[in-house]
Length: 441
Image (cartoon, rainbow, N blue to C red; front, side, top):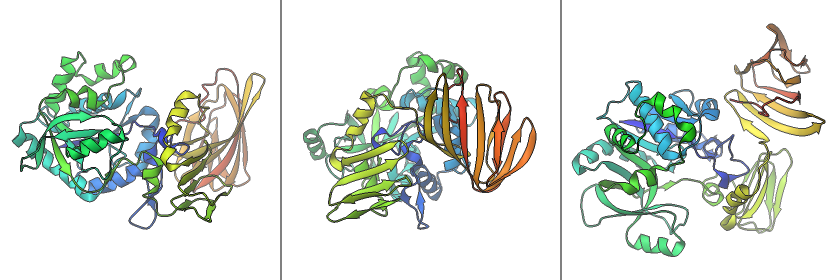
């Protein structure tokens, strides 16, 4: 069986920590077995390995997140990039066609598609081993994994299974996508399951579906059509149209941690970062990435979140509204980003006539570096704050350590590599023609 993990979501409900540059799966907040913290994607990788499912894993991410995905997965698994975000169906098809075109998967092989940011117990992943046998015994064309709801929720989709059988699976009767609370209660009375976004099928099933809707089964041709493809979810495009779908039931722990109330319930402390809680602050959490303290006094049931992107103060029950706000209002250029080589924070943006002056804090990981750039539309100055490494300008390398200053005029080729943890301040004067990107992967 081949497992395709999808990394497409931006997690707007977890703003200001999560966004288009750093998705929620990369947030290093969850308690780890060693007493430290881990990301959602790191936790999933650890659990897949523990369950013996890491033999054939493929990650599908947006092309701008290739490097950060490789970094957070420890460079242990292949990662392919989508040129555009076109939904879970398109991402899954791209991954499956990659496996097919490279000869790693044959038409009769089982493909399992799953989100890379799921949060579940160990038994959840052990159920994956049953998928090949259940697909064979049930004669289903599609297999889903659902979990018993812990409470009526309007944030999850539901799967309604047939009742009465003793098998390890049940036939799927219908689906309900994020119903209101009253309908969710009715669905729970019908023994409906939360839809975990897990799909298993034979590769030949997906190839036939692509042909049916007029899409190529050749990966190169499929990727060439990306710009014109609509956004399609696997649920609506495949699952809800299938008359031969079955579901496996899970009764343990599962959540997608897609909102502040579900994520904070998993944190090891009510205060992360600079700040504190004082007085009656029951069920209040502070998560602060800023270097200024964030204190909450006598306000229960809220989240107080600080990052370079902004500050969110919200009642937990209302915090999901931030997604609607972000969609209704234009969002400024990202102030923080993570890459394969480290991270950056935009400290200041100042327009100066036709130029834009950016002041950026760069943090480089040991033995990582920013590849050579030509600086065609920008002049830069780098001031090393801490650590040591090497800066190359027009091919000439020089040692770089705290206090060092390097200036690159427009058109000069330049690169930097860190030998230890390294911080530097960049002042960039961007001229017309600059693509506006702070830094890529």
